[in-house]
Amino acid sequence: MWPCRLEKVLTLVDKPVRDLLAAFSSSDPTPGGGSASALASAVGASLLMMVASLPKTRSGSNEDRAALAAAAEALVELRQQLTEAIDADTIAYDQVVAAYRLPKGTDDEKGARKSAIQRALRSATDVPLGVMRLSALALKQADIVGAHGHPGASSDVGVAAALLRAGMHGARLNVEINVGSIEDEAYKEAVGSEVAALDQVAT
Image (cartoon, rainbow, N blue to C red):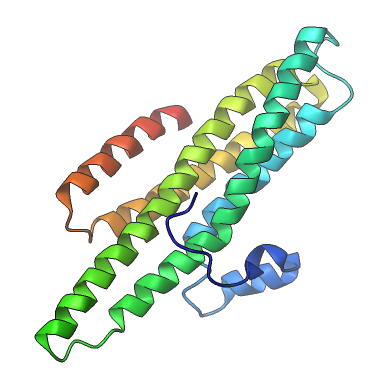
């Protein structure tokens, strides 16, 4: 799914929670807000999966069970892609940093550096944009889980939705800061239009 190649081991998602928090709090630029946004949405999707899998539903009807089963199936893939985005965002931003560090002593080097920066910025935009898309889809499943899930788990659904909205908002901030430095106006316009449309889902 992701435009950048995962060229290193996906270490973030394999870390113990304490180590992951330490990585976020370190002075290194990555992992940063983009990875944190993906993580928030992945946790939100996970909570929805839990509620959808509970033995008790809102009314105990076959309709409830069918709706929750379908939601759980959709959330499995959404959660997987959001999990992958945690590391994908870090890799994408590392590529931006690497591009800015390229030599610029000659005209050829300046041209190559500029092209590399633009490519990297596009990847660093596409990944959080993907997180926005996935979070929006998960929020639609939250409506289904909330409507058919057991009322005793309504707080879990609420927390899940809050995390998904936080993930969407954080991802949008990363989209906006990266797309602002991209020179392709058609791409920028397309991204802006999609972001505006996705925002409607979160409201």
